[in-house]
Structures are given as C-alpha cells and as structure tokens.
Image (cartoon, rainbow, N blue to C red; front, side, top):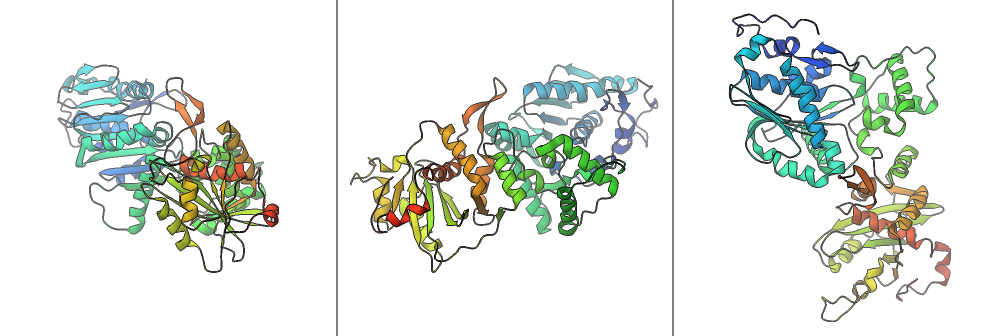
Length: 506
C-alpha cells in the first residue's frame, strides 16, 4: 500500500476540516481489480453527495459504488463528530459482517496513525466498532432497538424480494430509530415490482414529479442509470447492433430524450449479450425499466417479459357484443380477486381487475355491475372449487356460488381443483402466450403476475418448490382459474351451453 497522505500534527486545520477533502484523501478501499487504492468519489457518488436529503431512496445500476461512498461517509461522520450512531443493514448476517470487515474496518485500520491516536477504537468486534468520541457503527439485518443518527440500508430491493417480512420489519422498526432531520440512505438495484423497495421508489418518484418541497420525512428519489458512468463505453468497431437494439435506442431517444453515442451503444450491446434477461435490471436506462424485468424465483417472469417485449401489455378497448368472463379467487380473511376477460379471435384480452378484502360478496358483484360498460354482457363466472362448499357461517347454509347467483351472476362455473398446484402454474405459463392485458385497468393484477414467486428458504439459501402466500398470490390464483378451466371449456362449446339464467358446472 502506498503511503497515506501526511496529516498535520495540528490535524484539525482548515483543509482537514473539509468533508469532501477527507473523503478524497483519507480512506482506502479495495478496487474491482483487488488492489488497495485511495478512495476518490466518482462522478455519480459526488452527484449524490451534492444532492443528498435527510431521507434518500437510490435506485441504481450495478457497480456504481453507492454502498461504498455511503459507508465511508458514515465512518467519516462518526470519526469527526461526537455521539453519532451509524447503523448498516444488509440482507444477511454474512453480508453485514462482510460490509463491516471489507469497508468499515478496512478503511479505519488504514487511516493515518495521527487520526487513530486521537480517535481510538474502544470496541472492535465482528459487527460493531465504537470510538473514544462516543460515536459508533454497527451492522446487522434489523437494528430495531436504540436511536440512530444515520441509517444505511444496502440492497433493500433484494431484501424485499427474498425476505418480505424482514423488509417490513426494517420499515416499521429501523426507520423509526432515526428521528426526523437525521439521515437515512436506502440504496438498491431493482428486484421486480412490488415489495417495500418498489413502493418506496414509487412514493419518492411521485414526490419528485410533483415538484413540491420535501419534509424531513419525505424520501428524495435518486436514479443513476448505466449511461451516467463515463467508463461504460467500447470502441464501436466490430460491434454489431441488431435491429432490436436499434429500435430500443431509438425509443430511448424519442420517448425519454436519452441520446447515446456510438461507443455507449457498443458497450450496451456487448454487455447485454453477457447479461441476457438481467440487463435491464442490473443496468437500467430508465427508472421504470428495472421493475418490469423478470425477478429470481418468479413463476411467470419470462412470460411477462415476453409480453412486454411483444407490446401485449398496453391499453385495450372493451368490445361491445363480446361476452365478458370473470375469474375469481375467494379469500376469507385475505384478498378477494377478480379478473375480467374477453376472447376475440385467438386473443385472450384481459380488460379489468379488482381486488379488496373484508367485503361481502355483494360488494364484489356490485363493483362488477357498475364496471360493466353499456352494450356489454357477462359471459361465465369461473369460481374456485371451494365456492361449492356449504358456507357454515351463513344461517341459510348456502354455498358462496349460490350467493353469487342470487346476486345476479347466473352463469357460474366451478373450476376443478388440480391435484398439484405446479400443474396449474405450468398451464398458466403456456396459456400466457395468447394473452393481452390492459396496462391501466389491470395494473394491480399485472403486479400479482409479476410478483407471484416461490418461497425462499433462508436456512438453505434456495427457493422452495411451492408459492409464497402474500398479497400477490390471490390475484395470481384467480388468473390460474382461467388456465385450468380452458383445459375443460372453450368458446366453441357456447352453442351447447344452457341459457344465461341457468347455472351450470363443468
């Protein structure tokens, strides 16, 4: 390691009292090549520090160094200010300890001796360091207790995807350890729609678009795409840009004003060959892109990505004269979900979606009747297998199917239960190839399909072979009723079906 900059014996001079000077002259890191180098904030890191707010939400491309600059800045804050408590949260205890060992401890151990002689480490363990000025840094996966002046949450998107309960605990627990006016930095690459990080980004982006002054409890949105990094370039000679990428670059320019030069396009083309389907998640060009990419463990990830690529998630008109079918998932203590679909030629067009909880069946039927456009009529209403079971909570012992019929939806279909839910999931994967979905009226349902995923086994660090039950699973289950029913019923059979006022089953 090269010699560290000499700190004057009277160390608290004008130059040394400048935070940006300290960040550029005091702290050592290990770079991408594995070499020990003096840290110098890059353009993206400097931009963030210049525009930082009390509460920061950072959506980023891969390898821009935001976790590094936040952690070094936090270390600097603790060293040169008394009684600062800095907490760092990572997705696993091993990750937390690695951050502490490779960033915090590494940088402190290589500080000039003049500093360490004045600000000594009084506690030094695998996940905490405390200093003689009363400040301290600790890392973990929750950090609910105590009071912090600074909080850094690293890769909140991944935490939200794999550990939704932990992500909620961070929101309700760790966020509340930092009082208004102190500093919270949340940074991550995207990990699909839905989850705490996605919701935080949406909230922060809406505030940014509104242009209203932020309070100390409002998050400021920071987005750092791949093209901001000046080193993301390659010589254009010999790099082939296919038509799909040409169209993509043209769309970026026309719709978003993002003009890429030939060397940037060459870099993106070669990098996308390497990254494949993960390119827009790891190296997004716009803030919307990374949330539309198939995420790890998602059952319908590839199919939803293909639909977006084909332009089949768009605005769809409701066609008069074409019956509208409904597909239900009936929860008792959680969400009820309803999808609405028209079949036109070989296209399955999903034109409406609704979900709610804690409401009676009358509420859902009333919503459907209010939604129905003039000139349209209902087709069949597909209900899950348990809708035919007597509802013991009712004094008349009617089934939920009978209740729905009494409310006016006469043509009901009980969809048989599959012995193995994986069979129904595979049927849905295949059937999605014929689907078009209205992006606006089905937005909540699209989120369910995007985020319907396997359960994560934290102990074994692998995906379980069954779905996670969360706020997205009911909408996905309702959609699956269609895939399972189409194996037994098709539009060509309508000529033999009983009249509309007569209920019937498969």
